[in-house]
Image (cartoon, rainbow, N blue to C red; front, side, top):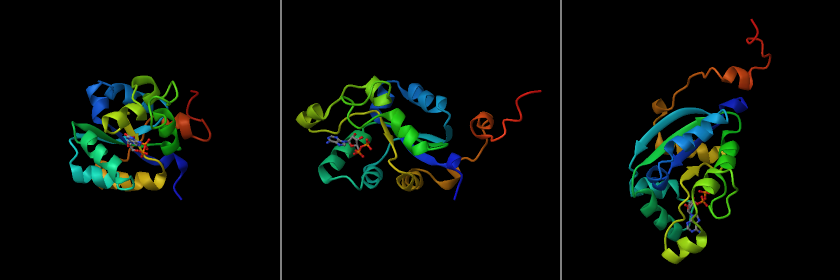
Amino acid sequence: MNHPKKERTFVAIKPDGIQRSLIGEIVSRLERVGLKLVAIKMLVANSGQVEEHYSQLDEKIRKYLIKYMTSGPIIAMVWEGAHAVKITRKIVGCTEPLTSDVGTIRGDYVLDSYAMSDEDGRAVRNLIHASGSPEEAEKEISHWFKPEEVIDYRLVQEEILYDVNLDGILE
Ligand code: ADP
């Protein structure tokens, strides 16, 4: 089994996140917790890509999501680090912005609700997607990225996050 620090998650900044100028804020929140960005690209998704990504959801919501997710550019990313999936979901917050905790990305930067999205017949707009489990992450990463687009490298801060002996600090 891989060391927990090698866990990866797939994150997408949805079209509303880009239109709201929140790219930097979102990247910054994931960076500052200690996660490592190992892949990133901007793209305009096509219906097929979105349909496959959300294949588990029921048809009505999936149709809404195709419209939402193909409406403008998105940013696809892979983040790596200990408990990457759970830590990222915690920072992102729960699905409906109205009830997402204060301090989370969805809770702090957007005000949509199921009541409003139902009334308007559309997907709830919540800025960001993050994988729900390591298995889901693996599927999503290979759906959106070629293996060579995900980069293995070391970050200097990993010494303090993961080094067992902390023996490289004092001179
Ligand atoms: P999450 O993105 O939090 O993992 P889901 O996988 O359940 O949530 O749903 C995927 C996306 O579909 C949500 O982020 C949201 O944009 C949209 N969505 C989910 N449920 C609804 C709903 N009941 N009405 C409108 N949009 C929804």
